[in-house]
Image (cartoon, rainbow, N blue to C red; front, side, top):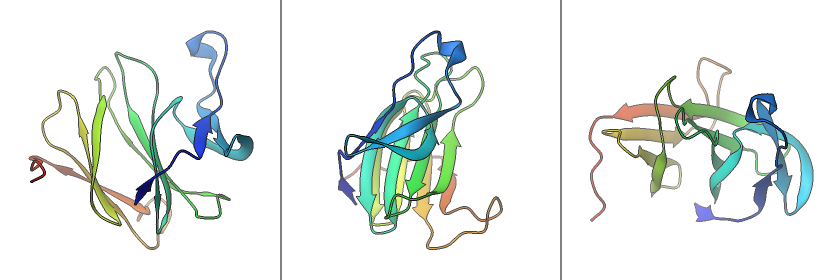
Length: 142
C-alpha cells in the first residue's frame, strides 16, 4: 500500500441538507463517472487490490467514515463499508497497515478499532470485498 494524491471529491454548494448522498470522484484533476459516499477525502492509498479511499460526511456531531475500494482501472467501486452510528461521532484518527491487504482504522474517543481485510473476491451483500471486524483493543505500533 502506498499513499497517493490522485483523487479529490467534487465540492457541493448550498445548504448541507441539500447535498447529494454521493459525491463525484475527481481523478488526476478530471471528473470521473464514479460517485462515492462522503464529502471530505481523508486518506487515499494504492494497493495491489485497487485504490482505497477513506471519506467522511463533514458533519462534526454525527461523523461517520466510509471506506471505498476502487478497481485498479478506476471503472468501478468494488466495495464500500461505513463506520458510524446515529447521534455518535466517529472521527477517524489513523489508518495503520498490517500488510498489503489488512489495515486497522482507529477513531477518536472510541475504544478499540476496526480491522479491514481486502478480499480477493466478493459476493454482493453477503461477502463484501472489504471485510470489517471490530477489535476491542488495538496494539500500539512498536
